[in-house]
Amino acid sequence: MKWEAQSPPDLLLTADHAELDGLLADAFEALKSGNGEQAFASVDLFWARLAMHIRAEHLHLFPAIEALPFAAADKAKTDTMLNELRSDHNFFMRELVAAIKLLRDETGGTAALTATAEGLRQVKDRLALHNEIEETRVYPLVYLRLPPDEAAALHSKMEFEITNMPPRFADSTETGL
Image: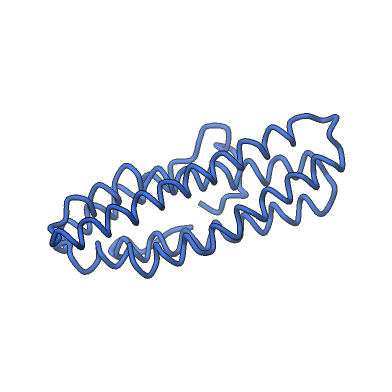
């Protein structure tokens, strides 16, 4: 996916959420097909792309928000919200690591596909609420409070992170990037 060069950081990350939702849907379809190799590739791609998104938030977005001036009560609420989002990120990565391990074990067969689908359903459910919180409460903080030049710099840094595919996907045309 290619974003507008001047789009605000919140639009960049919201668009990335939509792309990640599509990759997760692809992973569910691959699991449903029963093809273990295809399922592994789809789940691995979703895992990698979600990790890239999380990396952008952890390295750039969250520190930018934490540096914003807030009243004491608002600062405490913001810190709590960011800590909850970080906890969600840890949950997503743990579940996806477990899914990858299940799919790597070729002896798992249908049971591995079923267990992976169940783990991904938990990720999907939690991710929906997580993304809603980010899109309605977190991303607007940056767009509304950062000066335009700082928002543009933040956008560039985050865009780099969410388009910097791991080397194992270098030849992949599936990513749309």
